[in-house]
Image (cartoon, rainbow over all chains, first blue to last red; front, side, top):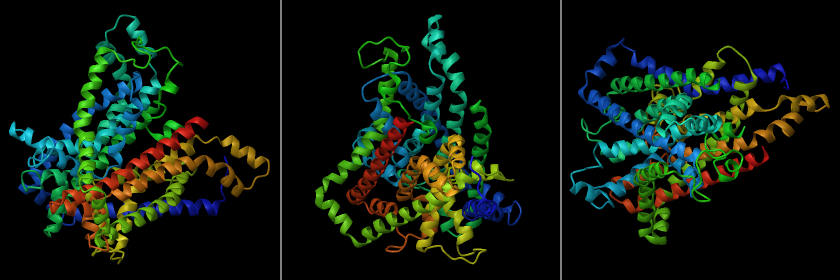
Amino acid sequence: MVEVSTPTKWLLRLVAVGYVFFLVAWPVGLVVRQTFSNGLGNLAEALGDDQVVAALQLTLMVAVWAVLINLVFGVGISLLLVRFEFAGKRVLSALIDLPLSVSPVVVGLALLLVYNGRDGWIGPAAESRGFQVIFDSPGMIMATCFVALPLIIREVVPVLHEIGDDQEQAARSLGASTRQTFWRITLPSIKWAVVYGVVLSLARSLGEFGAVKIVSGNITGQTQTATLVVEAKYQNFQQETAYATSFLLIVVSIAALVVVAFLRPQRAH
Amino acid sequence: MTSALIGANVAVGPASSDGRRPRRVRRTTPHSTLTRGAGLGLGVAMIWFSLLVLIPLTAVIAAAGQGGWSGYVDVLRNDQTWAAVRLTVSQALLVTLVNVGVGSVIAWVLVRDNFWGKRLLDVIIDVPFALPTIVAGLVLLSLYGPNSPLGLHWAFTPNAVTLALAFVTLPFVVRTVQPVLEELDADVEEAAASLGASRLTILRRIIVPSLAPAIAAGAALSFARAISEYGSLVLLSGNRPFQTEVVSVRVLTFIENGNNQSAAALASIMLVVALVVIVALDLVQRRVARRG
């Protein structure tokens, strides 16, 4: 391994640490400090605000549903992509990644065009059966599912490739059913990848803003999620509440990062 | 190396998975190895995927197509929209350039250097990924906004757009380059050094060429993310027409005004850019896979 001279080493270190400090670490630190600028008062005030509490509950509900749906879909699609051959597999595996590069605003628009009750493709038919998608929780869950769709798949697919299917074959040749093979062999070996993917999806789902803003209609107390509350409160000059709510979201996302950082080495072995 | 570079779908293609290992499932047709249960699962998954992703995205294209070619021209010839497109593309390019430079340096420091707090730096790199975008805007506002302790008042200026985009795209180049750098064979560098190559030569002839695909992949991802960014700009940039308004905000304005067709036209252009990036990434990855 080639050694760099000491001054260069320090210069590179300074650039890396300085950039990250000024762009990420210091600003995040400032928000945390402002949250606690008068002790726990800001947090207490935010948590006593009905609008904030309703938003937090809604966010949690939407995120849990979205993660559950993505979990089932993600593990299923990963198994299909890795263990089976079928026509159109490559196209599918490329399309799966598409949601990561689609703008949240475009996601919102796309769902709006199909599911709005007035002139959508499917919306009017669904609404006449009493199932409202847009401006209600199903639409918000769908938007959240959309943006977090590839996260679990991206974690599980490489692990499935890596472990191969020797053990699954052995289990089958010894008479295990498909279900037994999945629960006893496949799932335990992809367990950490699944957990990792779920944590990432949860963080992403709790924090979705653009897509949810469009499909939810942003109705205060009804379809307003935590991120929408942050925007509304900030623009209403209730900045302390905005900072406190942001702080809660920061805590959740950093907790997700820490969990993942602890899981990673376990996965390597 | 490739799997680390791409994160996920490496070598899913039939060419690499066929033939090496006996298939678990008995073949029914030459091309498909689906069992009945798996086929059913695939069907259900495809219905959900279509309802969620494919049909809505098609609807965007269809709505954009309703106005025909002139619809696109009208949207783009609007001065305010054109200003937004120019701002978005130029800022995204600028930020991608910064990321290629600084991101590679950060990846280098994380892999080759050793100092107190390195692990913390490694975790902080992921913060922009995990932070909700609206919170990212608020966070930047606290250091670069009206009450900045640095005395910088960048909110509502084009600088704010640069900052927000740099924040949300920080991890891409770092996280694509880092694993490749980790796996880089030190022997080659030592051999070059023992044959008298200078550090600069080693960097130019050995390290940079092997990192180039990873850097390109990271740059493509960060460009795609930058042009589609919305949440972090809401509070920070003020969305001033002709100054700090980006394409996503423009699309949202169209939606709020009920002008779905113009929104779809602009959105479909963004979709095409996203598709181009995905295809380009796929090509880069396959070239690397062939070589590697």
